[in-house]
Amino acid sequence: MGRYRAPTPGSAPYITPEGAAALRAELRELWNVERPLVTAAVHEAAKNGDRSENGDYIYGKRRLREIDRRVRYLHHRLAELKIVDRTPDNTEKIYFGAWITLRNEHDELLIYRIVGADEIAFSSENISIDAPLAKALLGKVRGQTVKIRTGGISHCYTLVGLRYSGSNTSPPGAAFTS
Figure (cartoon, one colour):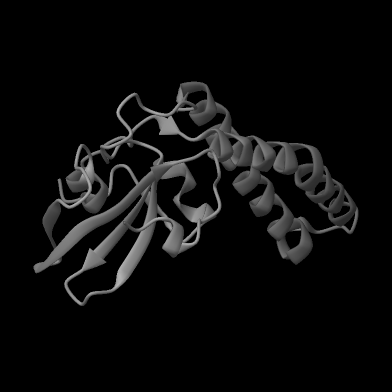
């Protein structure tokens, strides 16, 4: 019974239009460019005889499995994602897609955008809607303070700026604070 692991909770099925476009581009790149190249390399390596000691063949087959696994994941994930492409009715509160400026307890300004779990790797300023900080901030308004506890340490943040835009690039901090 020691091998049992509880399933991981699913992430929120939301994504920005920019995130969806990036995932589609990754899927196209893997399927139309990288997979044919690796397939051709495996085909050439297979011609060299004994496959059990052929590093190019073994690596190529492993890489094909990785590509196919990622392609399957992207195909299924894109089918279930909901693209959030409109600004919320109340832009004074934090919702999905918001650019937020926070001031921490050390008086440092932090700029984040709340995005889907599948797009946090696209920018260091993106935080997942499933992250504890994002969950604590949802529905808050400018001036409110949130306290979260992660890893046994308490953190305190004050919301000093909030805006919505279709841009996935970080706005200058000065244009965002109040």
